[in-house]
Amino acid sequence: MRAISLPEVAYGATAVRPSWEDLPAALRDAISSRLGGPIMAATSAGGGFTRAFAAVLTTASGDRAFVKAAPMTEPLADWYSREAVITSALPPEVPAARPRWTLVAADHFVLCLDAVDGRVPALPWASADLNAALRAWEAAAAALSKPPAELLSLGLPPLSDIVRGELSWWSEIAAGRVPLPPAPAWVPGRLGELAALERGLPGLVAGTGMLHGDLRVDNVLLDRYGGAWLCDWTWPCLGAPWFDTVTLLVTAYASGLDVDAALAPWEAPGEGVDGALAALGGYWLTRAAGGPSSASPHSRQHQRFSGRQALAWLAERRGWASDETSDGTSDRASAG
Image 1 (cartoon, rainbow, N blue to C red):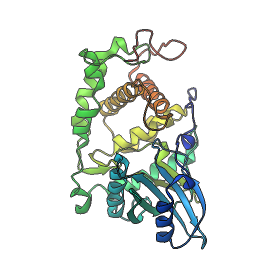
Image 2 (tube, helix red, strand yellow; image 1 turned 135 degrees about the horizontal axis):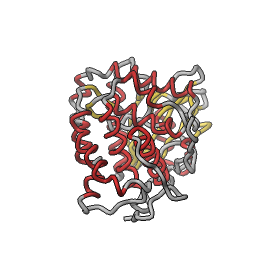
Image 3 (cartoon, one colour; image 1 turned 180 degrees about the horizontal axis):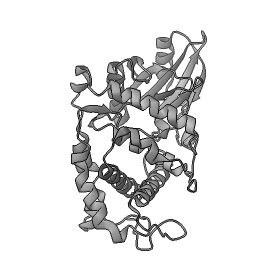
């Protein structure tokens, strides 16, 4: 087993959110009224990278609901509105919380979902937890292989277009249009190969099934019965389902697990997996070098950790040298 790598901050503790008491009184009153009684307890969601309110609320009658709220002036309000539409249209086989209601009050958009009594998987991944997450995604991918018309009507973008437009940073770096971010020491000598893997990826991820689009460890909840639930359905797209499996397995690679064996049932093309790891690594490292984030202060460490692990997995698969400086970055890198 390879050495285990862990992020600086656990994924269950990355969020920085307002508390229930921080919300405007009029908003609290509106939410309480919609839930049918006063709020007796509010447990904030520790995972995620937004600064919006997200908590499991418990009423005086014992009812529990997961509530998200964001100011109407912020993009998050649109994201929550989109999430409500998407989750309400998911096939029943998809293990995801369903929305109860939405409302607009005190200049906030509010999304109320069924509460899942679960936890974010701890790193390093336990094999049983990872297997539960993979089973959940397998069930979801099968159910979404032919997305319902209601979901298709949303105009889900093709993953191929997303790769070309958002996940092609090595090509930009190789062309001199973007500076090289801090990266493993072997990266500067393989920029051409990384860019070539990126360029070949769009044709390998094409597909008509619906993907989650942001499948990572902190978007998984494990319940007390050993089942897994998939959260935050805001960025679905159309493509090959193995791509989401690769994104989920990046943290499993960091956990020292046999990720290539876990990926084998998905019949992903080898060049596609390598292209996905190259593209994701370039995206994450470039974003991590972008300076302070307006989201959680831990978002940059997540991107840096994920980018390095994706490239380490790629280097292992390709047999590339991975001799790095003591801090895991290249001496020739620039923060950009």
